[in-house]
Image (cartoon, one colour):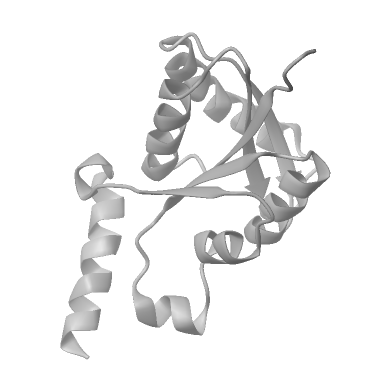
Length: 155
């Protein structure tokens, strides 16, 4: 009897948050695990330059995975991120979804919703959400997060 491989979907957006998610997935990788890194592009483009950009970004993750002897399938889908993640996970019978939280504030989440929250609420399989510590963010990402906190404190 063969034990089926666990299928883990790791959603990425090529940010510092995604770096932490890929690092986490790489450390938990086992031989009996199939890891897929999924990027949902905002809209389909026939531009070869766009595809090359995505491949270049994925190559950075290849290096992270190689440090842990982990292997992954890289895939790009087009559309709205939460719907794309949920569709891919169900279509490919994933056993778990791993994604990062950008730490959006509660007001924004209430008015707009977040990809992470939507996936968490609607997924048919377990979802692991990694809240990325501020010290792993780029300077620009830290500024956005700090501005958001500052705006909320003034309200």
